[in-house]
Length: 522
Image 1 (cartoon, rainbow, N blue to C red):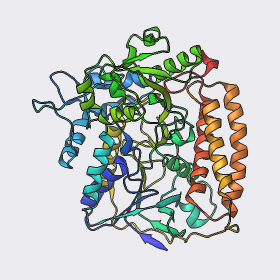
Image 2 (cartoon, one colour):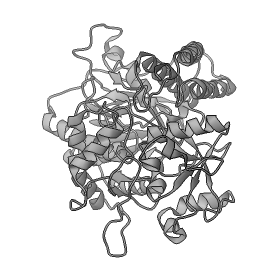
Image 3 (cartoon, rainbow, N blue to C red):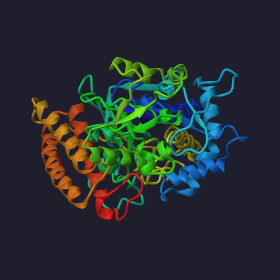
Image 4 (cartoon, rainbow, N blue to C red):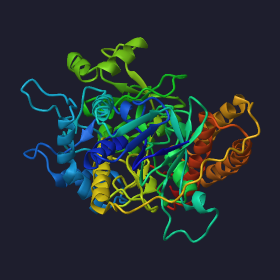
C-alpha cells in the first residue's frame, strides 16, 4: 500500500509538530503526513520538565550572556554561529508558542516566572510548573488536529528511509545525488508495511536513552532516527557525547527513571552525600549550578568513593509552599514513595538523558541527503557542542524546524516529481519468532552500555562493548532477515546500531570533553 504525501514528518514531539504546523500553513494545498510509532502524544517532549531558555528580560539579561553560558557548557565544541542564531531567535520562537496557546507560569504581578538552571547565569527559563513538555505537546497537538491538510498516523513505525538504493538497486558514488523519497513504514496494528512517499521528509524521532539501563527517556527513545539515517548513509557526528542527567529519582526497578528537574537545583536545592556533606564544593565553584556533565561526574565519583548507588538532593531548607507550587508533580511523586520533602532528602542518581550528537544538519536543518531534514534531539546542529546547556533543547527544535520550513518554502520546485518507488518486499520465513530472544538482547544492550559506556569510560571498556555488540548485531540481523517484522524487533535493530555507533565514535575521541570522559585521558 502506498501513502502519497508532499511532506512526511517522522516523529510527534516539538520538532515534528512545529514543523508540520508551519509547512502545512505555508502549503495549504499540499498533504502533510505525520507518523509516530506510539500514541500521538508519546515523545521525549512530553517528559521535558524544565522549560525553554530564552532571553526575554533584556533589562536583566542579554543575548551575549546566554551565548556565553551555552559556549561554556559546550566545552569548546559549539558552533558559535549556530549558537548566536538560536539564542537571538529564541524570543520570536517563544512568542509563537504563546500564539499557539502554550501557558507559561506567571508571578502574582503578571510577569513571567523565569526559572534558573545549572550553567545559566540568569533566570531565563520559561516553564509550566514541572510539566513544561506536556503543556507544549498538548498545545501543539491541539493545533495540528485542526489543520485540514495534515494526516496523523499513530502506531506507525518507520523502518527505513527510501533513497536511490531502494529505487535503483545497489549503486555506488551516490554522495552527490542521494535523495530521500519517504520511508517504508510498519503499520503496527495490521502488520502491513506501507510505502510512504514524500517530496520532503523531516526526521524528528528524538533520542536514544533506552540504550542504557537507567534513563529518563520514555520507552520510545530507541535511537530510531539515528539507525535509519546511518543505514541511508547520512552524515553523523558527535555520538560519543551522552548527557547523563545528574538527578533522576533513585527508585530501583522503575523505568524510565523519574526526572528531578534541573530547575529544583536552580530553585536552591543542595546535593549531599551519605555523610550529609554538600560535596559539590570539591568539584566546581558553581556548586549545584555547574553544567550537567560536571555535576553528573561529581555524583558518580561520590557514589564510587562511598560505595553507594545514590546520593541525595536536599530541599528541606526551601519554602515548602513555594516548592509545591513550582514542582507539584515532583512533590507528589516523592510523597507516593513516603519521602516527606520537608524533612527527608530525595535519593537521586545520574541517568542517561540526552545525546548531543546525531544526524548532521546545516542551519536550515538540511542533512547530507537531499530533501531529508532533521530537527530535535536526533539532529546534530552544533548548538550543544560536547554538553547541552539545560533547557536549550526545546528551543533548538523550534528554531531548526522553523528554518527547515522556511528553506523548503523558498526552494520548493513545483516541477519536481518523485521517481517510481517500489513496494516493500517481505522476505520473512519465520512467523513464530520467539519474543524472549528480543527481550534478552534488548536487556543485554542496556547492560553492555551501562557497564562499559557510561559516565566514565576507558579504551578497554569500549573494546569489550564493541565485541559484545557485534555478536548481538549478527544475531539480530539473522532474525531481521528471516522473521516477520514487529516493532520490538525494529527497536532492537536501532538500539544495537545506535549503541555500536556511540562506542565507535567514543573510540575515536582523543580527549575528555563535556559528555565524554575516559579514564585513559585523566
